[in-house]
Length: 380
Image (cartoon, rainbow, N blue to C red; front, side):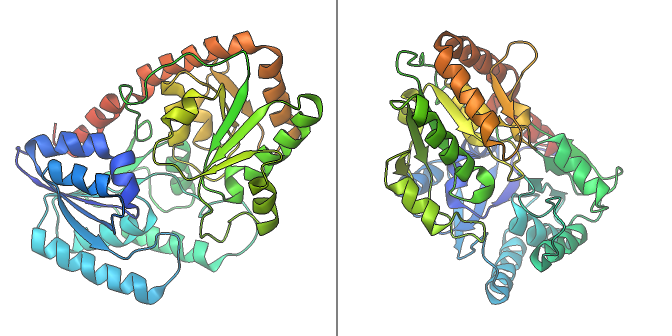
């Protein structure tokens, strides 16, 4: 067992995720260990101050996780290699694709004792379509190279489907040390329960504005519902992503018009908006780990509607202690049906929300997830 006082290097492709998704884990690590982060530039002053207050040492870069730039990536690799050689961490924890691919290879070359790459969803990279995408092919080849079996490596997944997918594609083998945790977890104290409004039933979606998140399906369902229930409120939170799968300008303009959906843009704190919503919707087929917005909704006692897709389906119990609905991918009619059910049975919203809260406590509590993460890192 590794003793206390180790150096832990965390590498991400999003500075916002360090606090939003890993904040509580960093707090736990910082109690006994020296934590370093290598992250794209931190633009939020509060995030920087939070890390500094935890005595976390910050190193910044110009990585854009969703862009394709060979020169930028080479510069990033050089920076990260020099940082690993300088810090000499005992534990290396990268998450998301570029940090995992580049960082895991570098950490092994530098003989870091414990390398813990986390895949927070596979995105488009293993989508079952017939099109040949060179970016997808290169990503798969690089991922296989980075995750070659090693005694020092412990791969973390957020759902069992992603683990099986990598085995099926021969990226890893059943002999790899692999672990499955329940997403990033959710802080049940920060996202606290408040009874939903069932007198005026409203719906909220929180997602980046890319097609695979189901933006079009949500918009179409809202448009159809308004023919019968014209006063129903639909809200959308999320940034227009600089991504090859970004929604069309036509759809974005329709959303921004406010005639069907109230578009709120990107917000710093989703809690007031979840509080004001009766039901949270995410018709995603993106290739999620476990969607954080659904965990936050469950923690706050909201019924949820999502797709029967990888990652999303982990959040809905539809047999006993029902907390929401799973609808087929890209099926607007099924989404409309689920939305209409809540409009016709508003009393069910409260019980479904409480069941979701119970599920969050049993399965997705960030403290439970972090306990597992510390064991995997051999820091418990």
